Image 1 (tube, rainbow, N blue to C red):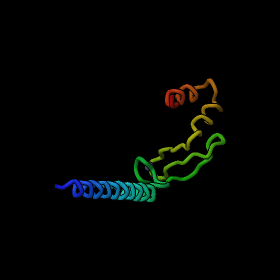
Image 2 (tube, rainbow, N blue to C red; image 1 turned 90 degrees about the vertical axis):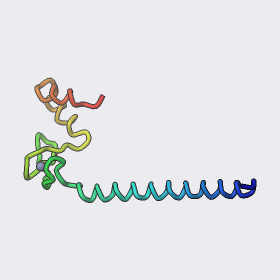
Image 3 (cartoon, helix red, strand yellow; image 1 turned 180 degrees about the vertical axis):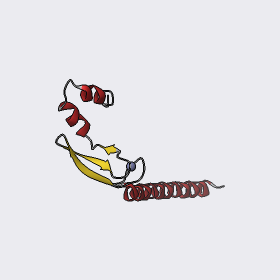
Image 4 (cartoon, helix red, strand yellow; image 1 turned 180 degrees about the horizontal axis):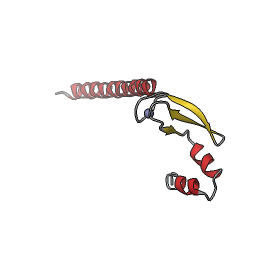
Length: 98
Ligand SMILES: [Zn+2]
């Protein structure tokens, strides 16, 4: 391959690599969007519908099918703080992110 051919071959390879990267990123974004559309508001355990329910002043999500509970970010801490020093505080402390 001449030097000029090599140069254009290299440019071509780089362009193909960039194209693949952008289509990979697009496919990833689409997969995430599909997953979110499918699972939003659904129970992670059984796929049932989640319903908001007040519990000790915090609105938690409870699965109408299996009773699993989903807490939004910060709700675990809110519940633990309302029970400072009690059983729940100690229990939740073991799950708190370090
Ligand atoms: Zn469930």
